[in-house]
Length: 510
Image 1: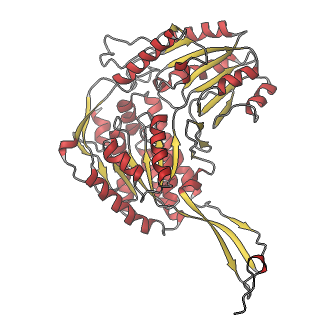
Image 2 (image 1 turned 60 degrees about the horizontal axis):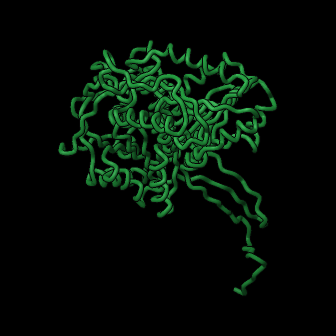
Image 3 (image 1 turned 90 degrees about the vertical axis):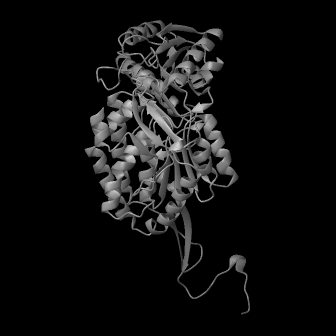
């Protein structure tokens, strides 16, 4: 552990506020200790920012934007390319820290850093493709076109389960678009953010990037997140977290007509057809349900199984779950690490009690593990449950490894069950029946932002826009044309003639 912390430049005590080139001294009265959910050990101490540091970071970001927006986009892309190379060089130590601070497996931690690298590559190409349109004008000797201009300061509020990748999805696109970024990381995983900010510093200094293009400020919700959300100097807030949090952010931003990218709850389902290839489906189901200990927004939470194969699938899943290795996520032999903290464990246990009270049944797992290697009390056995989609607890997103098995008889019923929740992030169907597949992908099919066929709900490629509908928030990040929200659209008209045609043929004798 000491080796990767040292490589990343983390110390026993760390400032939690950076303007990219400098770390601000922070009052130690706001110091907090960060412990790992893996073994309870102290990773390091963090001095959090407050109102004074916030104002300093905002002022620095405002000044940086005045310069950064005028730098040609391909040159901004070159900075991002170099950031991607630094992340490549430090993929393992940063992945180790993500795993140790958050609790996800080492493979997933390194995979998260790979997502950061991938979005850097995507953004570099994008820096030469910020295309507008040429539009036919109805007026003679006029040309119309659409151009895209940098927006300003982008506030990025990230969650603990993806402590670095989601920031990169936003920050790298915003940077090539000419924006500057202020990052407010989760209070549960701030050291991964601090380490990332330290990795950027060399690239920023070497290229004389204005101070404030990439800023970081840790702190309490009231001190930082609320200020950022309410600040008229910040035209766009990207926030990842619970639906409850998203509603607060959305209302605050709507009140001042700011833009939002909201990535909120997911209650994702896989439909398992009687014509599915089970050898293909079962590994995807298990990984989707237990990966990151169920703490992904794209985690598979509901498995909607055709009645004719239900009993067989249930038996196969119990066998598969029985073979899961649960333990220290830095050991690559283990499949499942800990939940983020004891509150998450309590939430999972309360959900299982609610399930039973509502008529459901736990058929495997759900217990809290104890004994050697499990001293923190944050390790749980992933649960398989039988339930009805209508149960109130099934309608909620419990951020824990609980998989609900639900029966169906027709594809129309399965799709209705899939859509019958308030969240709309990721969805999937496993089938070899073309008609079922096409119905699932039709306007009468899945109502989610992500719809997959013969692949699970968990994870996404950076080339496609990521996000969902309904209480998932409607935001889109990463690929496709997600870059457009980080810019302001301008419709431009040029009159290259010698007359000025006015609306409705109005004329003035001038």
